[in-house]
Image 1 (spheres, rainbow, N blue to C red):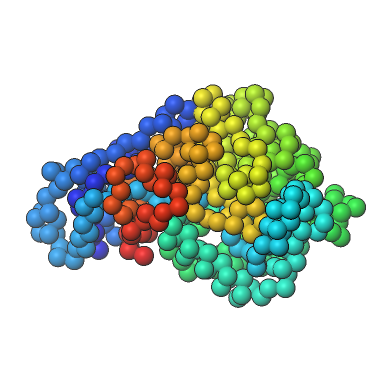
Image 2: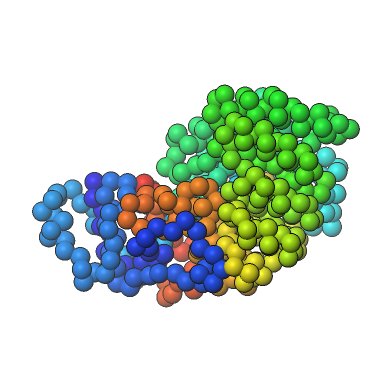
Length: 417
């Protein structure tokens, strides 16, 4: 099947040569083509360019099975890549939302048995089929909002059986939806109540029971640890990542959300694809990241929802680092997977330019999922994951109009969704 999108007002994020990531000053640059076409063959991007160079007669000589889409007045972007979510969960946590309004902190809610432990209790009571159905709705919600690839973590199980239940649901979503999915094992998301007096014993359970089970069924691509104040220590994290590495699980780390935890350093030590959250980042952490291949990933939805300090994104970019922005879609601290909104938060709260947030939510998040050779930009040979906007005046308008639905059509794997 051939698809031609023609008369595109502006084709955004085009690459003649595929990049793996964009760093420092280069983040403020986006390649575009005005009055453009995009040619899709089967599920891949076959060609693109200026309308003056499009020879439709030549294409029709090949086949009559062509879908033509007129994008006059509209723009075409690569689909968002969301490299950090927890969207497989049971139920919601709006009661804790009220606790936040009344002034309780994230740590205080967790100490009262709320937070992650609350989600673990709900998940334990929920069947695998019901968990799949709840999660399927969220998948199609983010697809409608322009996301074409997403990472999903376990971590609301906190025991071998329920962690496996979550990962089986993620696998089922991979097999039954058009979005690209990477699975992350996050058994070390919180310490269960029964292990509060012996955290080391729970870490042993993650290492000796959970990781071998996950690896045996090939249910995860990555391994993650919440390395932060009140959660898992650098030593715990070191042990878990070492064990995961032995089973071929590449690291991704929750780090420095609540304090200068050392999570960034241990993540870099294990060549983590990304270190995520990063509200607490100083000169030492920036230096460590500059000497690494690890993607610093900011989760603006969580910082906004929890009223936390904002990560020093501008300082990191000015130092020459790449930045990724992901949604952290979860029931407790970021109950949305809307990546357009994450772009708006990036501009408003982190003082990033529109071009920077485009790079941060596409090519750099693709890198944080190990997918930047497949998605995250418009390039020949990449998977045809794109969306067509409604008629908008400029690129800048997209993050500026933060409450507006500006997506007209979604195409994933070359097919209109």
